[in-house]
Image (cartoon, rainbow, N blue to C red; front, top):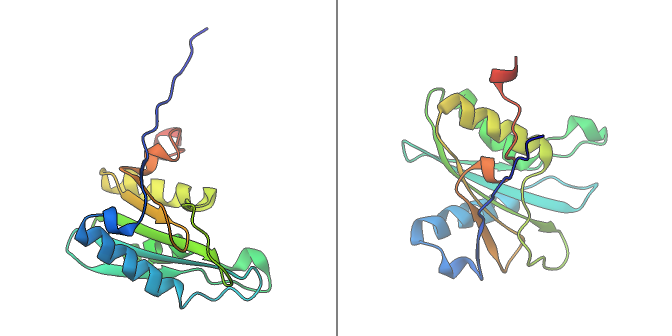
Amino acid sequence: MKQLNINTVIDVFDNQEELETADQQLMQAAIKARSNAYAPYSNFLVGCALLLENGTIIHGNNQENAAYPSGLCAERVAIFAAGANYPGVSVVKMAITAGPVEGDFEEPVPPCGACRQSIAEYESRQSSPIELLFMGTSGKVARSKSLGDLLPLIFDRNYL
């Protein structure tokens, strides 16, 4: 038998002010995107902002539907928009903010499993990591240098 040890490194900042200025600006773009989310069923708003290698920022927010499987998470809205509108341009960084319509949520909220798999596909496709910054509505901000830190055993084209 062989044992596999997996190490993950996530940096956690006490607040946005500890981030570099460019990262603060990207998170502010995610916060703005979050304000336009359509989440009448869950009342849980998510905003996302992607930084592309050409400097373009793509916004996304969750879009719910009465037929739950028909909705889409903010991260996938943004990354699919980037792929559709900027094919061949790498995603460098992604900022995510999430929380309830009412009240504050101070713990970082990572992407769901489906979004992790979609982000992993883009990392694999572009052969470079996507840095993730994620937070609740305020408070701590987590940073992962790659989606591989959140989903270390990704399923990718190498299995097909």
